[in-house]
Length: 287
Image 1 (cartoon, rainbow, N blue to C red):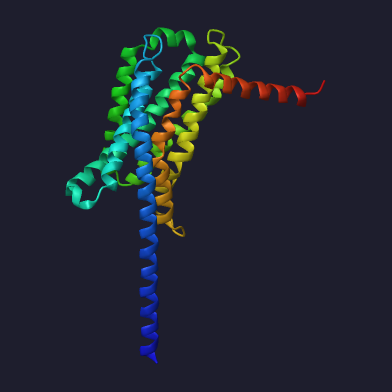
Image 2: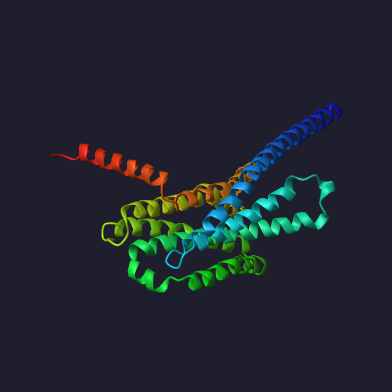
């Protein structure tokens, strides 16, 4: 009787292992297909966007510098994704490790450049005089050098600190209150700003909202999962696959920042949204 029970138990375990293997094999296949689509769409569009944004750099308009650096981090991430979908026989053993290091290095740097973009857009509305005097291309280039060096500092803390995961997660979580503050401060200072055209104001607010959405929807799930790595009761493998897929979508989402830098169709769209909101406010307000 005991032999029968042992046989049934071993049979159930083997069937469970087979099911898990087949399930994760399907998940890996789906993730590879999604990654290939992201590469095929994002790589050419990112190259075009970098070339287009480069022509917008002027002495009095330095935000394209931060956007260009953000797109460069996206370009490196997309190149790293290529090594992940290639057959194992095509790449060297150490290539995958280097690609992972470069990918996450550029991922952290992209968050830093998103903070720079949000800060620059906030200063245009909240402190226009200070911005015109102090914000130059030299200052922006210096800031970019600091942002590119910042991931190395975080990685050193991750290696040296005892609670490295918690410390790194908290550092990556710091941009969230900054994004909220920049957006709230910009909305508060809009009525007092007279030196910025109304179309430019709408583009600035749209860019700040987009940066906040990109960080919240694509980066924040991975950061929260990173901080909760010690908790139990959740299937972390499924959640990590889903959150990692969100991270892969960030280069495509960053391309929309270029749209908010161009005058034209986006101005009409934002103007219509603002007009609809004003009309609804007028209707709902008592006479």
